[in-house]
Amino acid sequence: MSDWTLGLLLVLTGAAATAVVLTREPGRQAVVLSAYGLLLGMSMVAMAAPDVALSQIGVGTAAVPLIVVLTIARTRRDTAPDPRREEDEDQ
Image (cartoon, rainbow, N blue to C red; front, top):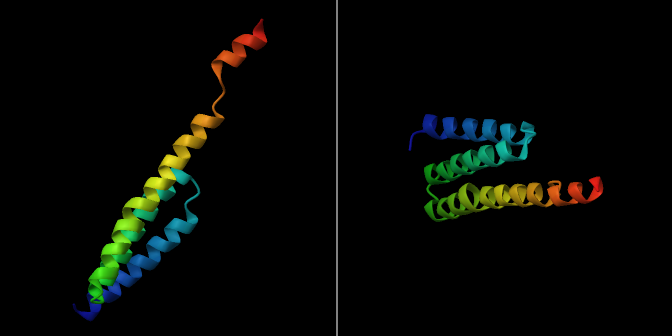
């Protein structure tokens, strides 16, 4: 792989890492984190480490963002007001 390609991947990886840190909403952060994991995996492939890249893509691009999204959904479900409780309070 040429030097400019590796340099471009490293710059994009740094920009994606900054975007992950600056993203405030957890749902969007999961998407940005997934893109960051993909760029990091592509950088590892460019540096001739395909086994590490495969692990990074599997965990950083799929598993961790999925866990974040499922946690957000569970938290919103558990903290949502129960309409049955409002009916009890009105009576």
